[in-house]
Length: 60
Image 1 (cartoon, rainbow, N blue to C red):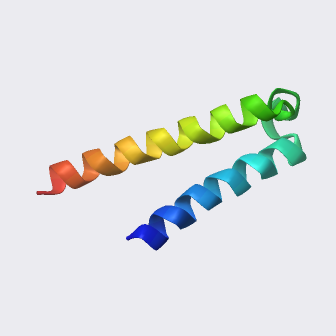
Image 2: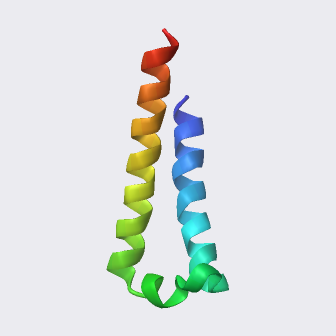
């Protein structure tokens, strides 16, 4: 379970970095700032975490 969570966190950072470099959806200018990059990455991780908790809660 922990390895899966670590893989998701790593994947989010790689994915946001990829979007930043590929200029997809005009996000390159927005994600150039390091603080914005980490804010976006941690917000996505937070949303994924809350979604995972809700899925686990309603499965039982």
